[in-house]
Image (cartoon, rainbow, N blue to C red; front, side, top):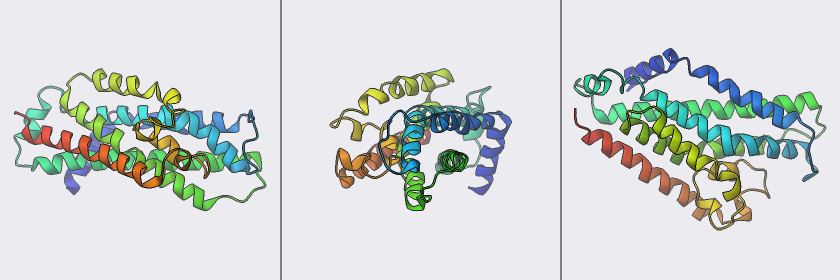
Length: 240
C-alpha cells in the first residue's frame, strides 16, 4: 500500500494539478474579506464563515474533488495504462484503496487551506471576537467527512470512463443546482453535493435546522458505502 500511495502521489504531482488548490484560498478570501451584506450573527467569525462556505462548499469544493479524482485515473486511461497496471501482481483492492486514500488526503488538504484562509481573513479584518476553535474543528472534519460520497462517486466514474471530461460533466450537472437545493428542507439534507455545506455552517445555521443529526449522518455514510462499493466492485471485475 505504501508503494502504491507513493506511486499515485508521484503521478498526481506530474499532472501539475496541485496548483489548482490555490483556487481555494483565492476565491474564499475574496468572499470572506468582502463587506457583509447582513449582520446574521453577533460573532464576526461566524458571519465570515457563512459567506466563505457559500462559495466554497457549494461550488469549488465538489468541483475540485471531481477534478482530482479524474486526474488520479488519467494515466491509466492513456496508452493502455489499466491493462499494464492490472496485469501486474498487485492486489486490485490495494490499487483502489490507494487511489481513494490519496483522494481523501487531498480533500483534507483542501479543508486545511479553507480553514487557514478563514483565519487569515479574520486576522486581517482585526476581529475582536475570540477565535472559535471548536467550530473550526467541526468545520474541518464535518466538511471532510461529508465529502466522502462525492469523492467515492467521482473516483468510480473516473475509473470507469476513459473520457476525462465525462465524470467532470456529471459532477458539474449535480453541483450547479446545489444553491437552489440547499433551500429545500426535505431534499437538501440527503443531497450529497449540499451535505458539506450544512456541516460547515456555524451552529444554528447547519443541519440542526433541517433534520436530526443521526439521519443526516446515515445519509452521508449510506451514499458513501454505495458509491465506494460500486467503484470497488467495478475495478475488481474490470477486464484486462
